[in-house]
Amino acid sequence: MSTTTLSDNKTAIATDFLPLYGTDYIEFYVGNAKQAAHFYKTAFGFESLAYAGPETGIMDKVSYVISQNKLTFVLTTPLRSDNLIADHIYKHGDGVKVIALKVDDAKSAFDETTKRGGKEYMKPVVLKDNSGEVVLSGIHTYGDTVHIFVERKNYKGVFMPGFREWKSNYKPESTGLLYVDHCVGNVGWNQMNPWVKFYEEVMGFKNILSFDDKDISTEYSALMSKVMSNGNGYVKFPINEPAEGKKKSQVEEYLDFYNGEGVQHVAIATNDIVATVTELQKRGIEFLNIPASYYETVLDRVGKIDEDLAPLQKLGVLIDRDDEGYLLQIFSKPLEDRPTLFFEIIQRKGAQSFGKGNFKALFEALEREQDARGNL
Image 1 (cartoon, rainbow, N blue to C red):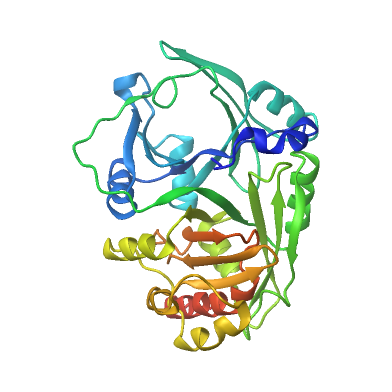
Image 2: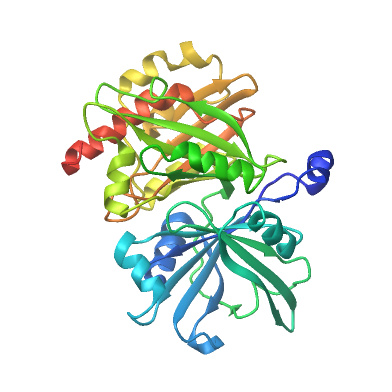
């Protein structure tokens, strides 16, 4: 979800055939949802929100819904092996299946995207209970990932029909995570531009930034990336593909271990990155190590910032500036045993870009991790 109100971009919305109002939720397919929910509550400060499973009439899977401010995750596990969710986990490991997007009209979203070439995942369906109704529809995107359009304007319940409130006495303190800033997808060789075309033609997005292998490269590896944004700017999807290098890039490693294309990382916003990351580290979350040499010259590049440099250096937070301000960002190590999905924590101080000035330091840090795994 976005922190911007719907009235801020009336002109863009009026001309947008697919008006989106942010990320409704992200659904992960995981091997053990109960344990994953405990991990995300403990390590990241999420709260229990809702539950669905046999007790609510769903017999083939269980889902735990957790939330923090405007950030909602759904953690889903199959109950039997002869199950498409089980097949997804066997192939990919734990990972993102659904990027759900908030809309006013899920049927219109489905009609507009499928008539433009979107591949149907879920025809419009109305879910009802005593709290009202939620309308869902969906289309496929890269790999086995899907977008579900969520219309919940007529619903007052805890999450959606089929779920019940999940009450828990275990309530760790929040870590200050706010909402999804952007989601990054990794696609195969020469597949970035076809997926850019998909987002342009099927969903009405625009390519707002492009990075080639000269922008994102080290001595050993490279990748290319294009950032796609919807009409009102609430939803942004950078798309990465490998580029030729002396050794294997981070995208190639991801594709190998995920067995295909998928979500590489979820970037989550905070208003105080020092406090958030300090707390996350206390709870056991590991982040990429940035060498001290990065901080010797970073202020020469980005200029004056409000924060003291010493705490940022201690935590390994990266800094970059664009024409609108600066940003602070840090990247976790993979959250799964497979070197696939990770999180970015980002604090924007006006900047609307994605940290181009940090690419070299970030990629060298990623390469050190790859080398330690024997995958460089």
